[in-house]
Length: 230
Image (tube, rainbow, N blue to C red):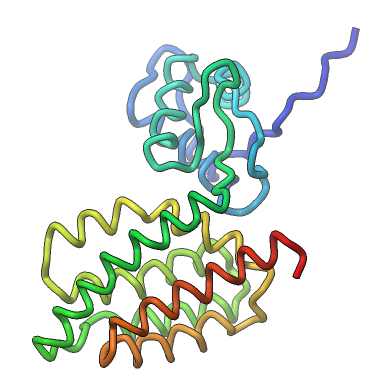
């Protein structure tokens, strides 16, 4: 009798990163599995709401269910997946309420960091290199590199404030911010993110209270309009 098709299909690991079999599970192996699933989520290959089952992860990657459970716990902590009673673990939907809450928190943290930067007349050391990396990633069509470069731009602005607590809290949002950007990907023409972020950096360094809010409200509207077919 043929075996039923597995749902969802799991993604292959990076070349050269095959985890050991069940004899040596542990944090390193779980991280490799978590990284593979994370890439699937952020690329859009694993759709929002798709179920992620321990037994499927275990069979696909040749690891124990304990290791698979640890990988899912990592992704749950990053809010890329959601664990619900009786429904199991699923790729996060980032629904409208979650989207708004994330953007509000980003706005508070980034605005305060940039207010410090402005008041101390600091020029963020790494922001120009981050913008150039974003332009190169967009030009090459490398979506994972685009996600990473986009995060670098925002982190360069936040880190310039030299506030460890703000920077720490902001970094906790990294995975959700990657997921958010995946949701707006269809709305951007090649180079659009770079153009938008060069203008944003210039405005944010002089008037963060308005620039950050406008920037995040713009991306929020793009996502909500896309969901409603506007």
